[in-house]
Length: 347
Ligand code: SF4
Ligand code: SF4
Image (cartoon, rainbow, N blue to C red):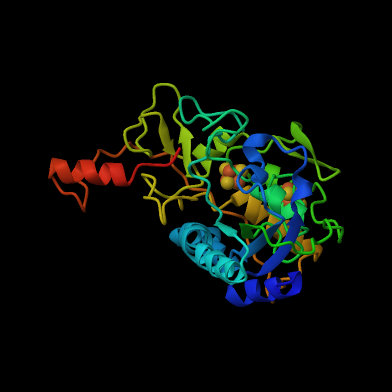
């Protein structure tokens, strides 16, 4: 019979860095659109795994010379490749014992709610009365919290004592009953240093506007992050000034590169969603620098991450760039259309 200890050992052997377990009653009071019990009504446990983002994957952006690695290996690749394999393989072990298990990676692309929790217009409807609209979105940071892996920082990033903000979370819902972990009560990680607020390229993390929720009897508070602004700035763009024309996003004339992007046009997504040109400058890099300097993280390094003032690109000479023939599709309109569809940005 699988117990919590054995499941955690398997998870780590399969590739997870950290593992915690939550009982489902910790979701009592969750909004139905975010309540995993609607996905698996007979679920007894949620296994939450953390997959570290290598500090090295942030190095190229910190230096300003190699941006794709974070979006590929520290973001999209973990989410869409590495994590699913680990999560699926652990589910196989659990189902071999006769307990249903749902492998849920980091992704929730089909969710019915938008980034601020509102139902998306004309998107989906409940299949029958009493059920939420598909897809439910599991709030991964809350999952990490109820599984005892760490805290939700002021930036809204999930912070663990091992890696600070440097991980992605994957989840398994299962009918297997496992002993839950206590809610995290180790050394305080977020000390409200506000480095995330200061360093966010778009000032998307307000210093004075927060969200408060009660989860499993604990009052949590984090910044009311402006997700629309983040959506623009994390991809390296910024709005053009009046009378200016931009070409940073294909087909849009009101966005130009921000001083946090060296690219004339946003590079294409890697592994579906990887397009984090800002390299999580505030919510991950500044936070990590702060946590490391306080010595609160277990994953220690011989040398400090940051050794010089962060760079800014001088775009005073900026001119919009004309659309060029796609290097893959060439001039074939049918091929161009197919590629356009395949490369559509997720909203
Ligand atoms: S991803 Fe970038 S733009 Fe978005 S909150 Fe983090 S630092 Fe700010
Ligand atoms: S940068 Fe400071 S305030 Fe922001 S989440 Fe990290 S520890 Fe908290």
